[in-house]
Image 1 (cartoon, rainbow, N blue to C red):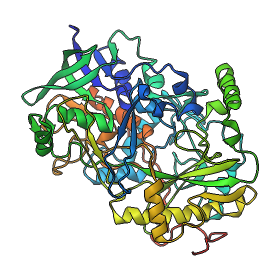
Image 2: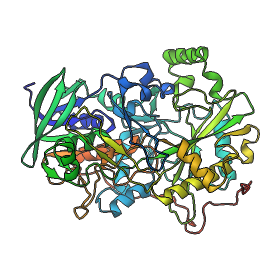
Image 3: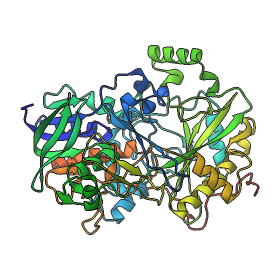
Image 4: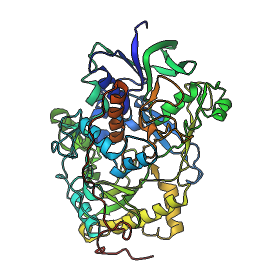
Length: 565
């Protein structure tokens, strides 16, 4: 290839698609977008209800696994990452959660100037087209369509779960992505008129025919090419041939929280001991590359349902065929939703300013592969601790770009994380045993009534917890004074000119919820920085935080307290 490019973007995921669109919008810049995977025009990707299939399919997904996790009975944890146009936004659960305002305020407090909530909110709004229209918190004209699926109309369990949360003493929230995250309410998803609103559909479809955007798929970038301390291009493999291509302005890594630190290390940028052990020549020492790895864990809290109203009756081949046919014809019905249509965010103890536990409610009892987990009818709540203290790492172990890196999360390394999970299990059980669910609730299938003591809960969590698939923070954005900082507040790699990282790897700490929305926001914000455009005007608006958070865990007395074991 002898074309000249201003920018080379590595990875067509949630961030890379945004950048490819915004950097080519004026027509002035020539951009090359490189993606390892192929096209996303597959029904299993585009139909929301089929969400369990792409993440378990080698064609669409890097099937990474962690090393044996020492605090999870040495289990190897599945870590799927998108390998297709749209990246992980094409294989994820489509849940739209911005995180809490204090997540971003905390980033700025830690030295990341210009990334407070008031700075980030305008970019959330710019990226979004919310079904309810634009207001002070939500966007109405952006590329990413967000909605409530079927808006809880097709199953009474959604509202019963919200009511149960209220009976347990927690508030209700009209919009957890708006003024008030804390509480129980409807859940939002990235779905556009019944079709997955991936970053590819939202950003690439409107940009792919621009003459100044070139997209090459099914290529594997080997490393960033350096001239001294300046990035000048990339080396990539296509059809078993190694090629190089130069960038006139910048190389931008948007390969995700696994791929971006891996590429930096393969390029000789990272911790000296890691590179030496892997047999890669050191070009620039940055000890933070691949460190600070964070993720969310979750468990399935499952109950039998006394009424035959759950999705368990829709898992047979005939029902799936009918759902698929309606979706193909009308883009509506059960095929047009991820089925997570109600949710909750709570604090696990007093003295925590904003929520650290998240709930997704599902009117079915299913396994991670989408198959039924019990006979008859059931429902489940995905419960997880959102602000873990444990930290892991990603390290290459070979100079071979096709060799998978060593991933170790160190899940539950922190005693506070383990205590948060004990609290989570007990609080969840209490919520699910409120009167609002009496008409539906059968026996507790998981964890089971026999799991009560700290030791029993610890053992069950270790054996059953799964990743929520939110790896992040491995190319940390931070201040110059922090030796573990990898990029500055503009995404520029410390000590290397003309090289940036833009994806969820740059988050200093993981946000309070699913990561697709924050990653898109970050890319929108970084696009302005790359182009030298004045940042959008800040939004000084109110954010609800419980006024008594220092002294109480919830607002009111619980209607039916959990009986102590």
